[in-house]
Length: 355
Image 1 (spheres, rainbow, N blue to C red):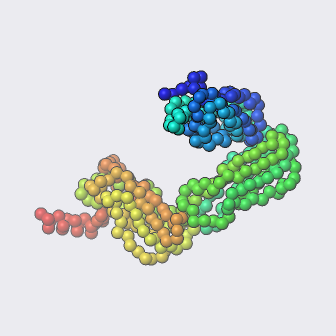
Image 2 (cartoon, rainbow, N blue to C red; image 1 turned 90 degrees about the vertical axis):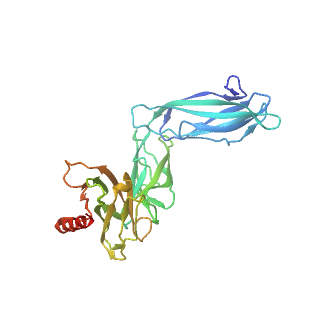
Image 3 (cartoon, rainbow, N blue to C red; image 1 turned 180 degrees about the horizontal axis):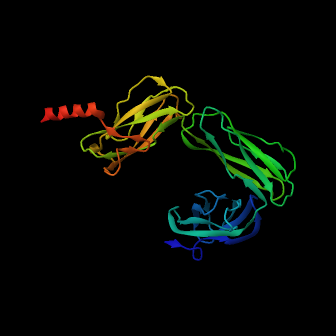
């Protein structure tokens, strides 16, 4: 049986909190009390949050009958990009009562709501630190500017950065109305291609606002390899005849490399490429047999130097469009397996032999 707060065991006080006007990035600490008003012990099942806030209570915490415990809540208001500066947040605490043998009984939920209005005291640009790893060279430093909107001088008192991030700040230890922090990414790892979350940089300031600024830090790792074209559309204009198209794979920096493997995910698309050659680019011939399935597939081209030597191509099989000259594939052309005058003569001979 589920109980509401009005007829259940667990009560929260206060239920609603008006924070009024609060400074942007200023950490806020709240406290509410949880009280077990029933005649059986109550166990906390889970805490759901509608905000980026913290609630210092452990799932599974048990409150004996009549016991009250404090629930600290941490929250940090962040400016919104919209004109609406009012925030409304809530915590939902689920509980169950325990019988004499500790078995679950009644269940319920209590809510804590708090709201207020953000008053921007400092501006932070940008609000996240993103490094782009697109070559063997170290990524460029990323600069974050923090300025007092009231032009009140302030000092950055602390900068915490995750590994392998470092920083430099010309105004270190100085009071000013604006500060620039330059973040650097060191110790380049063999990160997978894509967005890699590194951690959180935390900056603390003096007035205005006693701000504590949290900046997500990530590295967007681009592959050393590029494939052209990146998207291929193969049209089935000659049923029974596999289509052939070519993909050129090269390194961004123009260095020679060896193509170790060509992967596909389905059997209607294949490659007979096998080469131990080291070159600045490789032309890979792909064979599409749409009658074996068709649809969509991904070709992966893998080099020999770790996770970053990989390139992908999307391949789509489509119905024939007679209004489209040739078999258009982005920048390439999918052609019959035997092309040109000599190819057509060979096919005629083969057809006559079959007849």
